[in-house]
Length: 359
Image 1 (tube, rainbow, N blue to C red):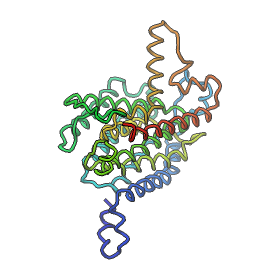
Image 2: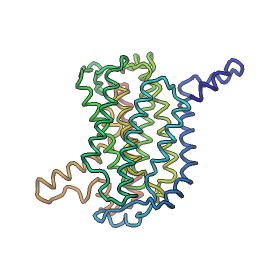
Image 3: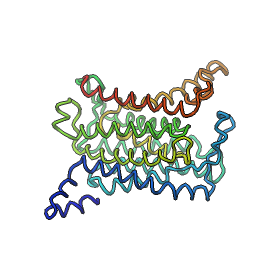
Image 4: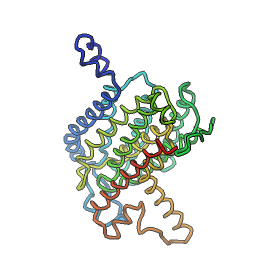
């Protein structure tokens, strides 16, 4: 809680008064996480190379990906600490929402780390079994969802974009919904993380969007004016979103094509889960379908491909799933796939802001 220590001197140095403003702390959180991640990355990449923590490329993947084999992975091990330190510096640590998000980030990060460790360091190509992985994810999400549900300042109403008067109370049904959003977002981001910078840039865009949504939802006058749910204390989540966006930018410097490092499951599973948790906390769960539409599209491409393959006895909808591989096999150069998907993510995020007034 560095900002509170600095703010103690505001009576002697008047300009230190700015540290009490949420917007200022959000900016500092973004820049702090960016700088920590950027500075740590160079050292961490060298360590990962020395430890031979390299990416394993499956034989059934696109042939062009063979050149990526051996590239350092598990970059999430320096992304997550960057976020955590920044949040500890600039967030209000008495805020329950901040701790719920940090719990989810570290829990899913631990699951991803275990999976990466088994696959890459222990040379077990399967990693954690699907049963263990999903069971642990559901358990972590369940704890977060129950904590939210029993917290007095949080309710179980569901906000439906474009319909300001449609706010059904789900009661205990809100818990399985929250679990689905958190676990679904985590695995959707994980599936998207298949090309250099493909997942982290849309994540930065998505967290930038939820930074705005959390700030608006935590400001009673603005929330009332926009007719969105006011949630006391949720504005502090904007500091967390800023930290994730900043760390994401710092990581993107090294993850952009041609990537010097990959996130690994430790990064993609945790950041996806954080995105889902933030969507739940800000009461914009359904809006995540639009804000994170790229991740949804990637996940659905896998689901449809597998279902169609089984139903037809071997036929495929796409040349390969997730769908970014489909475009690669059609002859699109990897940078073209990446940048076009980034553009789609930005467009979807901009469209999500239209829901603030079109209600």
